[in-house]
Image 1 (tube, rainbow, N blue to C red):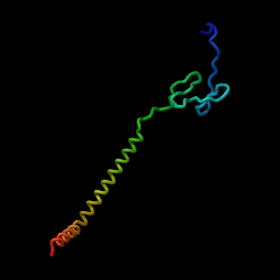
Image 2 (image 1 turned 90 degrees about the horizontal axis):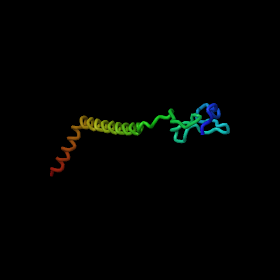
Image 3 (image 1 turned 120 degrees about the horizontal axis):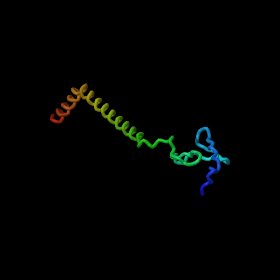
Length: 109
């Protein structure tokens, strides 16, 4: 039913919201102004999409964690390789002497 032409219906009282905007007063009690999933907001007359919520970014945090893990692994491998090369360059002659002594001992009397 529609109200008579001269009557616009009951006056609408603007909703009163809490200072943080999460609650609204219905005249008897405070009610939540945001849906449990935070996707909808009560504007005083109807539920409308919540503009304060941004959609998920698509797992950027997980990608960052994987990237850091791979980077750390590569850094450890590079450090280990560098350490081995330095050892071989500085002690190469001594290692060669050890092996030549082993060969001489195995071939000796």
